[in-house]
Length: 113
Image 1 (cartoon, rainbow, N blue to C red):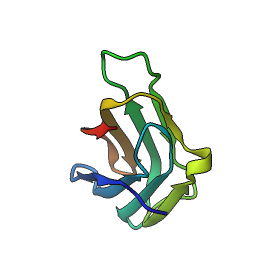
Image 2: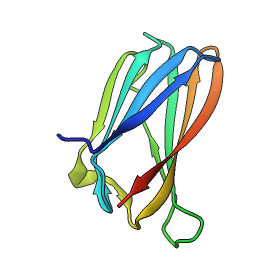
Image 3: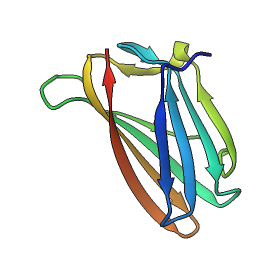
């Protein structure tokens, strides 16, 4: 699968996590791939929120990674079952990760066209 958005790397030094979120891109259903580089184990929760621009009436979408992704590896959501990003604009990608050492949340923006 081709991923148009590949700038979703989150390095969470406080809890020892490093992961990257990829999106197929564009308005509509988006396939998502989450690759965990660290920790090797002890990952207890990964929640990804797609927050729309303030000036549009699109819903916030929350994606929770399967519990099988407990460390190094990847999880994929196919585009056919994808995350519905329904309006263009500057969206916020917020990632909350919990490991055995704590929880950390980071966010960055991306442009959806």
